[in-house]
Length: 202
Ligand SMILES: [Zn+2]
Image 1 (tube, rainbow, N blue to C red):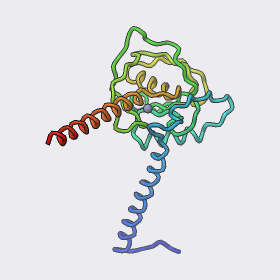
Image 2: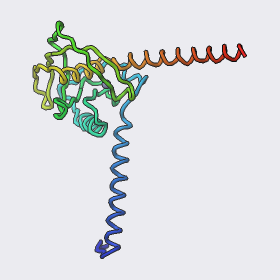
Image 3: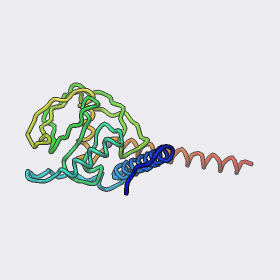
Image 4: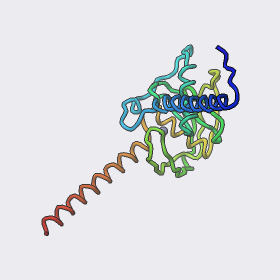
């Protein structure tokens, strides 16, 4: 069937296609954002395994790339989307997506610690100050599985340290979230006591 439409019907058709298109884009985006595991998910507490030499990780990389793109995050670890492998993807200098496979810190600036204000895709709405090494040297395999040793500093160092912690089944934002929850519970139980006392006093 031909698609030749004229005049008004053509523009109506185009408008409809645009709507369908944006709707599709939205559901595609949602599909990837739904992959992000959150809060108490056991995967976030699982220590990730080394990626084997001949392991095919193309699909994992594609998924991680899309999730990071749609989320607008600075980095993501594989277990945040349910893959317990030592793979992280970070946006170096806030713009260059870089995969680090089987990464490990081999040097750190123990005498230079910085406070960084962080959030995490797995703990939406939680922000906290975390202490990080200003500089770290990391040994990892790049996308082509070539071994590299790279020094990261400041912003890049922070993002890499955040993601590396995920691979150990940990996240500093988890601790901050837990503390905030306990604080909120205390507050609500205190206000319950105050309410009760006010009532009793009536
Ligand atoms: Zn995180």
